[in-house]
Image (cartoon, rainbow, N blue to C red; front, side):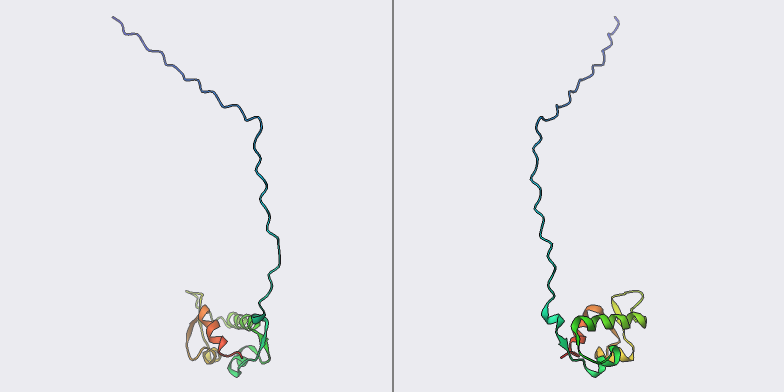
Length: 118
């Protein structure tokens, strides 16, 4: 008695026919590209204290200009901590601005500088 070998049957898989009318999605609405208006409080000219004027120069400046000038001074004199670049290592001029602190976080810097603006 010989065993009959079973034939391997292949299943025929039919591919789905392409849809006759593809449903088109409505194009997404584009947001209007409007320019941001600067906040008037940041653009207001403020008087600078003597300690801050020794670092960035005298005269009236907007808060944004003061922070930009401070960052130029910090980068020019290489005062960022090399391991943690968010920390600023103050030199003698900056210690007067930072209230005697030797190392200040960059977020804390703006808080300390605001005391020198009127």
